[in-house]
Structure formats: structure tokens, C-alpha cells
Amino acid sequence: MVILGVILLVIGFVTGISILWTIGVVLLVIGAILWILGAVGHSVGGRRHYW
Image 1 (spheres, rainbow, N blue to C red):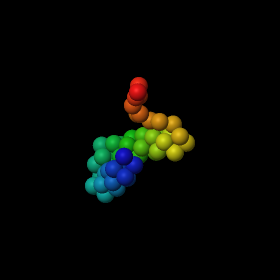
Image 2 (cartoon, rainbow, N blue to C red):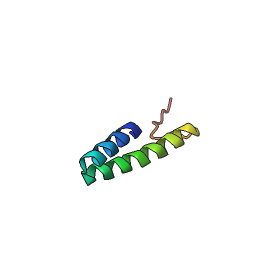
Image 3 (cartoon, rainbow, N blue to C red):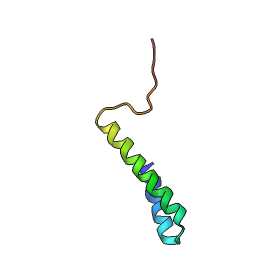
Image 4 (cartoon, one colour):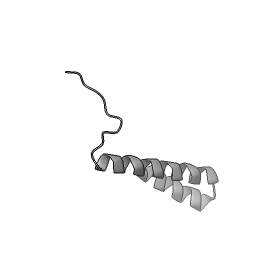
């Protein structure tokens, strides 16, 4: 998600398409938050198993 955000940021910056820039920033921020939560040991979007 972080890599996709960076790619969209670059494409949006080069072409001047602001919606790609905006989507890239959002994906970059969300990806960074999920990466940090995963790094500190929190399970993000995990499934519960009852056996």
C-alpha cells in the first residue's frame, strides 16, 4: 500500500492530475499507519480462530 501510494504520488506530480496526488497521499498515510501498528505487535485485520 505504501509503494502504491508513492507510485501514485509520482504519477500525479508528473502529470499534474490532482486526484492521483490525493489518492497517493491517502494510501501512503494509511499504509504507514498499518505498517507502524504491525511493527509494534498489534494484529491489524486479523482473524479469530476458535479451535
